[in-house]
Length: 109
Image (cartoon, rainbow, N blue to C red; front, side, top):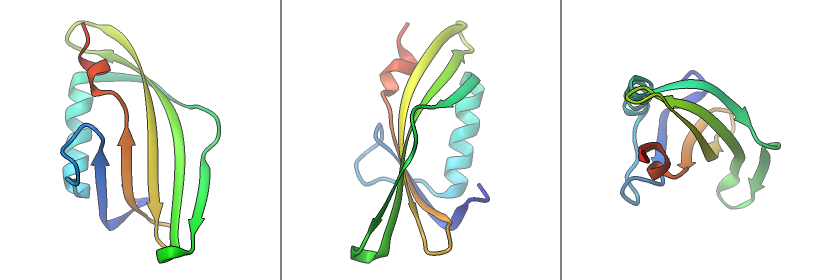
């Protein structure tokens, strides 16, 4: 979490549109995730893309990942593709993170 700005906002495509989490809420969310899943590996797919925008002096990094998980309740192996879009401030701190993945893949029997 040290890479994130103090007021960073976290968005997840599987939650209500426009609803974000704080750093403290995201830390708790990660803890809950780790209670349910064992993380075997998180592998980068390809290379991240860095974009700069003139409007609002925006900086965004787009990246793609493959999370290899084991659901603790039934030991089912799951490969979850994830796309992250992270906004950065002028000091290089992450100020926003949007996660795109299929939550239903985590729940399938």
